[in-house]
Image 1 (tube, rainbow, N blue to C red):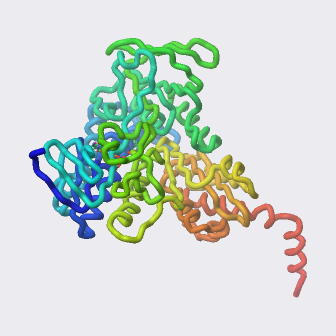
Image 2 (image 1 turned 60 degrees about the vertical axis):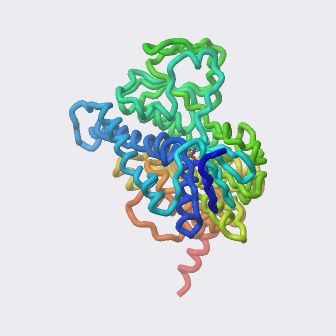
Length: 475
Ligand code: FAD
């Protein structure tokens, strides 16, 4: 090879949530860093994931609130959705955040940014076009792509994924979503609220990872928004063209035939392991991702892998947390392990569904004493004032009231879960949450109230009543 050769301390492949965090941290700590990105800086989260989906959801919420003001005595004229303007809002939010992830910012931080496709050509060598980079350590943060299921005819019809749906400048007349996980349901509800007729087809059950009681609240809300939710669907084939896409299949023993103007495939993610030259670097991988140990090292001790490409929990905050671990393990002689921290996740439907720790089912499966505490949103004064009473908080405790898990289905549940993440990480008992002074009236009070309910049976039981009566007789 005749091209340019670069020697560096750390070479990072992929400028998404994981790669950017490693590159920024390592460079600011004094390492020489090369960051390689073949697509847009910012990766999935900024361009085709978290940011555009949450911006779309925000627009949809505006439409929903405007249409639903009657109960508050506020009536609007019919709500009109200018979908092109919604598209511009979504792209505008991406543009507002993009400078944080830009080449210019990273160059200013001292990072050498190379645009192009990186491949390993040896155990400690990567090439990009004609350029060769040799490094003491490498971090692979190449992310994931939409997994496309092998459905007959899918390759012959036009379909959308998260990589294309946010580019639509015209509102779809109708949308069929294949896949009833968080991504499919978030987009389905947002589109329905923006006036699209939406049907979601799920092969198994909706939101299977979440607590079924809390998930049911979310699914009911989607139905109220007009989303048609069909589980246990066996899709046999797809036909159609730009005018309409038709799906045929079976559902619970009955033939199923549906049509929509647009189709969104949201059937999970596939780690980006192809065409990285992993074999040449001695890195073990499978279609499920790059294999890493608890120090996030691959089979090649000089190479680490983080984020979606490892096939673990696929969230931006997980990629960023793993970046922190790799920073320590790649730059310093002492090493840190992943795991041991509670990882929250949130589905940004309305109401949101937030979870951390063990679900009730998982706690019971582990054995030991389990108590489940519930507090309905309807018993929260602020939720009543806001007329957002759908939902509940559910907390699972173990021996001596130790907090094992929490699930919240509520408007803003993603904002409400953090104290429970801290409680689980700190190994707190339920008494710590019951004892806090929560501001009134806030929805956040549900955390204190649910924790307090742990003590209610003992506090108001006959022995306590007898004791108090006795004490009251004392002079
Ligand atoms: P990415 O951010 O995908 O970055 C990988 C980068 O590597 C890409 O830019 C890619 O171009 C580049 N790359 C790949 N191969 C090469 C190569 N050979 N050479 C050079 N560059 C390469 N997570 C949340 O926590 N909250 C959310 O609300 C949320 N919403 C989401 C909504 C949607 C619709 C989707 C699809 C995902 C969402 N996620 C959310 C998940 C989140 O986006 C990912 O977990 C996160 O982006 C993973 O970061 P990463 O660094 O592993 O990969």
